[in-house]
Length: 515
Image (cartoon, rainbow, N blue to C red; front, top):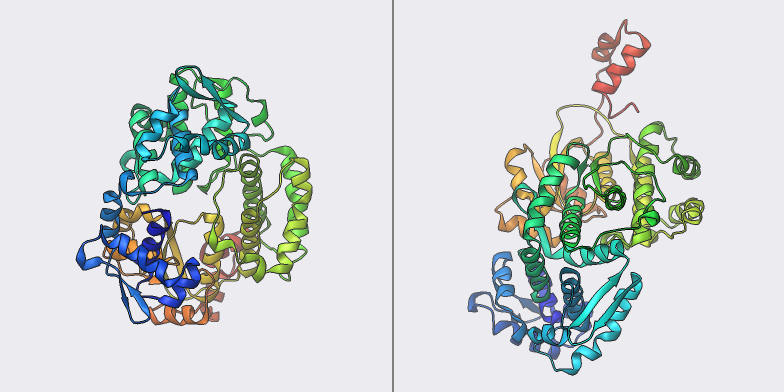
């Protein structure tokens, strides 16, 4: 069994029944190859959820619970690892231990002795990308060395998808880890157990009172802080932080060491916030972002009236994007792959508008960041809400950042008379017990299966809303956004108000219309 087999089962779990023709095209495999994959998978699947070909469809009754149980049964002795998987696993081990004997370590993968040598080019590519080296220690093994901050960031990117946040901000294993992910999570959670608790306490006491991080940002911070505390305990400190001083950051003073804090503050500044207080600006960046905002506003047909919110969101996004691109602190997002095709002119405007910033801070914005910025701009172009009767309460369940889902929210606001009290991560489903809502919305098959497993009613639509999606949402009770204001009532409410009082009144009661 290999990574493709698991990917095929994962996709089928979300998309059964799957047309054979679609499966062949999507995976680039022949039907005979897919049948061999199905046979291999069925050997470890209970009979009631096994895969079958039913005429022109591939079917299974497997749910998320059975999928998790299946993954737990797949051990390395039944799994053919790729070089990339083995190297990522070894890289985390090298980060968690001063010396690792690669030959001994590779025994758990059930591979030949020559595989260690054959994997060296993959390891060299990984470490050189981060300005790191693997040193040979005679008669002992190998040691990872180089820039300490880069080393931690690289390990965090590998660990991140294998863990989740449990109670009291303690990190736990992701429930559906594949064999390599399970191995990475187990060694991280075991070796850093004490530091994981310490990191959670630091977050609760020193960071959360100042800022509110989104789920993914909070998880990254907890992984980094746990790993940093573990490395510091073993004597691996950051002793030079000048490379992290290219932007002004808020001083959280989490750790006792100044260099460590400078790097940690920069990392926090790059994360996704649900609330970021405007307590600190980078003076140089402000002037650059003002020019960028002016250039972007000029390419829109609508006038931007809420200038403060417009500047604040673009400033925060660009501020974080500079850091993320300098240190490659981001993952690909398939939902954003179609943005350039949908909005080609705006894409070109955005790409041109950030050139000055890219040049000054010596970085290049990724296609993912450009796409997200396009959606932020489109969100403000769409921001034209109306007011009326009581709004339906909608909660969006998503793993996307606020920057990306903000566009989706504004599309909903432009069509329906709703409020969105929260957007929650799939790993925070328990929060729904404390929230009042009329409708749950998601736009991925994976999250749909999680919600089904949790016994929750939901509506699944496309990220790029289609006419069928809009009809489906109307059928589920979302009213049109085209509500009116009763003229007589409005006149009586505002009669005799001063200009300042009227502005406050309109902002309080009719913020959906007046900006």
